[in-house]
Length: 164
Image 1 (cartoon, rainbow, N blue to C red):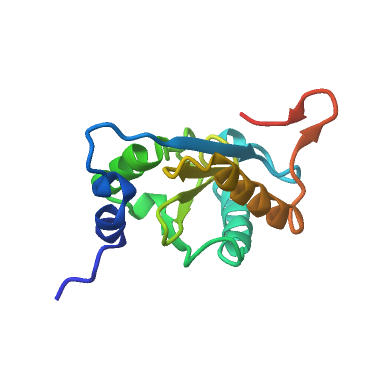
Image 2: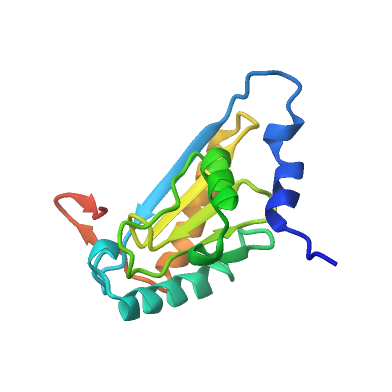
């Protein structure tokens, strides 16, 4: 017997699938952050990327704002699953460094995606389809605050948060 595929479940519950119209209105929000203690993903070796991946994954899996988060190792995702993430979240989930271990976390609602060790150490995505963008942004902000309790982000007083 085949195990249920969470991506198929997400697709079937997706707000994109529930729309009665050919036009879908949605807002996509994202925050990009890098840890101050590690090189950016493009410069990481396998060991550094594993340390960063493990630390961010552990914190994100315990963030109270996420409803049943599920972690996926990028190297284990099928092509169609990566394509689904691109289409659903309007986000690329690829790393430019083949030595860099990366992963994604998606919550049960299908409205949140965290990419770990992609272009940056962390990219948080939120999709709003209810025209309540303040709520979507608030959720991202609260998740970032939770992460900042355990991790120091790369920040410059002159340039702000440092990203790739």
